[in-house]
Length: 171
Image: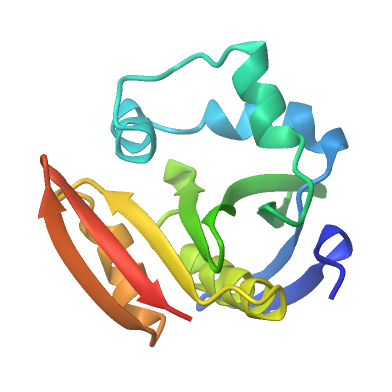
């Protein structure tokens, strides 16, 4: 599977068509625009710190993925006749067979099932790449993210460590 050209279309619960595709370097402006739609709380849940601005180095890390050890997908909806990135997911291989996974959905588009679709597609790519496990650190109050992990039908274990929930998913 060529993850760098990955693309799929899903139907959301409300009938909207959601495109899930590989992140492209040309997505820079749309990705930064998406971040502007995140509340401070949503950014805190994703980055574990108050975060409103990103350095060029951070932006480069998010955009320049190799689709082998670092895979990133975006969720795209059509709104007012234009394509809008409403969220994304990624995994970064942290040791052989295992990758750290992360998600973010902008506030106006949360609770529509987007993260659930994203994780299913990340799982497909990860399995094709030979990965056997996802790990994630989740703040205990981030109940929606924990629900996404619970709904993905993978064997899941959790452990609390220094105020963070360590999640392990078997692929």
